[in-house]
Amino acid sequence: MNIKLLAIGKTDNKELHELISVYENRLKHYVKFDLDIIPDIKNVKNLSEEQQKVKEGEFILKKLQPTDQLVLLDEKGKTFTSVNFSEFLQKKMNSGIKTLVFVIGGPYGFSKEVYQKAQGKVSLSEMTFSHQMIRLFVVEQIYRAFTILKNEPYHHR
Image 1 (cartoon, rainbow, N blue to C red):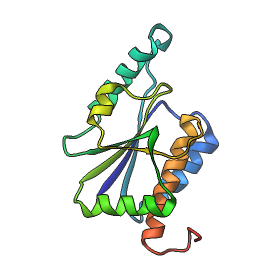
Image 2: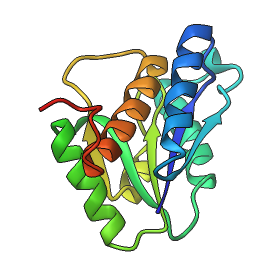
Image 3: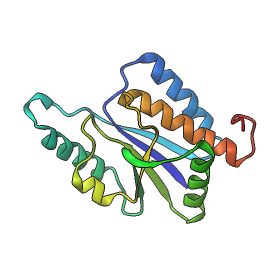
């Protein structure tokens, strides 16, 4: 199985970018992982929240292959412990999915078309984090999940 993380907008914080890279490199030992950044929408000031979600949704949907399984990172999604999340990933791998795609949307969430295409929603917390920090949290949690599955000492129980 491959895992892809789609995110709207670039990370302008150098330190966050470096930390994300650390976990991306660690993940290479377990799974093919890609972080795909969708550029920020131009002239966003001229768009309503709904128009912005629709535009971002179009970009997200263009990045998907027909066989991809889409999971949205959404505040109304299912919450997991790290161990439960590792079990979630194991079930996805066992099901024969070619590519599991996690998506971090823009500041207003996702368009209805993206919600309709999604096969699941995951929430990392009831708290709100910047979209840039969520990237780090997701990549770290995916890495943690694989260390749990391999019984490696990264995660302490």
